[in-house]
Structure formats: structure tokens, C-alpha cells
Length: 86
Image (cartoon, rainbow, N blue to C red; front, side):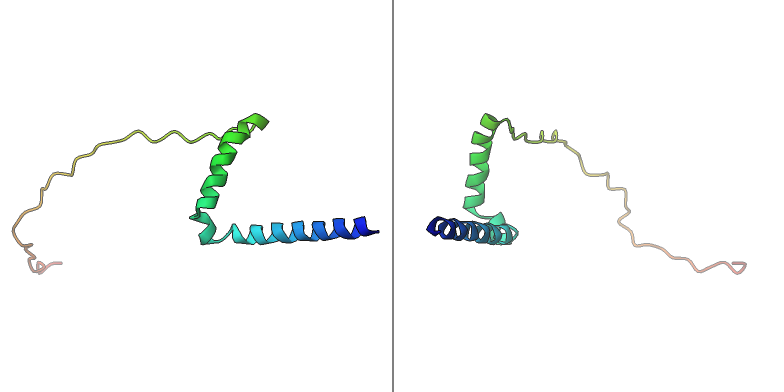
């Protein structure tokens, strides 16, 4: 009977810990934490042992572009009055 109580308590603690971690992992504090980065690195190292490989997306090739030619006049815009027939 004691074993059932102990195992039930362990199960309740495990479910409570999972629920806490689930909600905490959706916060901004978790996204920037060192713990998250350490766990990701651990999964990258240990994952291939179990057949799970982390593949990073290839980086985009760098591109160089020049600014467009400056064709604008330095003069102010001239607005003429409408013609009488318009």
C-alpha cells in the first residue's frame, strides 16, 4: 500500500513539473535563457546517437548591391496651372 502512495506522489510531481515547464517554455524568459541554449547543444550532441540529426539550413549567399543612380534634379518642382480646356 505504501508503494502505491509513493508511486502516486511521484507521478503527481512529474506531471506538475511537466506542466510548469510547458508553460514556462512559452515565455520570453525561456527563449533567451542560457539553459535553453545548453539543452539545444546537448540535443545536438546526443541526438545522433538515437538517429535524430539536427540540420541547420544553409546560409543565404551574400549579395552586393550598389545604390541607384541619382537622377533627380536639384531644382524645385514646377507646377503649371491647368490649361483652359481641361
